[in-house]
Length: 459
Image 1 (cartoon, helix red, strand yellow):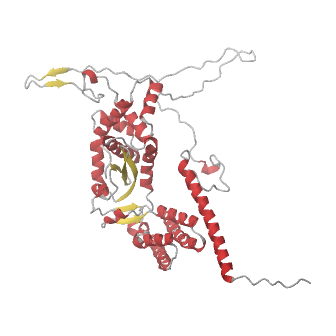
Image 2 (image 1 turned 135 degrees about the vertical axis):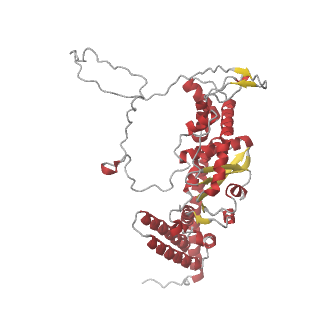
């Protein structure tokens, strides 16, 4: 028979403290893992957009068979009249087995190739003098980009200069890579300074078009603004973009304040603004505001990932409400919900959000999220209102416009001079607007360089 234990019963307070210590230790271990992941991501530039969590059962790669296959992936034959060269592929006289080969039919195969030999043009510029006023007069051919003669008589063609702009501002190639590409692929001798001068010249020709786009932005029904960091000569600057359905305006400024937005839109702008909740946008009191739900959902996801215990409940519930709003909008677009039904759902979602915001919260990050939602309560579901039912629920347009510029910033770190920053702003404005309106940017800039005046749709 075992002897009775003489040890005293455990202290309830000690048990409570030990449990609390175990919880804190687990919390510290979780935060250390997250810190290690963030630190590794900051140093790993090769895959900056890799997924954190992979799908457990990903779909097999490649196209789906059946009706979901999509557009057949083959290159169409050249149109009639587009064939430049015709070559024969004759039959051999004998087969590998030794037998004679008899011709049965002729099949067609097509090939598209890049010309490697550049075009060298000579312009015989006729010069004269007016018999009336005595002024010197010089002829001009439509393919010329400049009237310069003498030491500046050898120039780059308009298509070549437009291609340089495209390779740098759209494809993200540095000046040195453009120089090597032109030498290797086409045998065209260029210097890095020549590449820079070509872009500055193109920016000067595109300046009036960019200014017309800026003046047209206040007339747009909905504008999506966004901003990100930039550098001019190694010093901090800011890149601002303003995007509508047909236009994109890009401006690089030394400051991040509301001055740039006021310069583009004006404080009396009365259209719709879809933005990420940056406080200066609240200065536009006449505008209709829509908070970007993608930013709020991302913020909720980060809080759910880093919170512990019951602190996960509030961001999870907010996320469910926002996802329900997006789901209702999708149902309306699929004609599964009427306009009146959409308004009813919007009212219910507002009540659910108000109930969440009235509850007490002890977690500071959750309290900050709740404060943001309370301040912008009437701007969460604007896209569900009958008068704004076609409005975007996220600022994806500005995110898409700014992404190529962020890639360029990773390549060369920004602009070295104010003139380079101005050229970046002007050329990006024109290139992005051409892409939105399905215009060939190479042809558009080439025409501007030749002195023509092509127009973009500003309404």
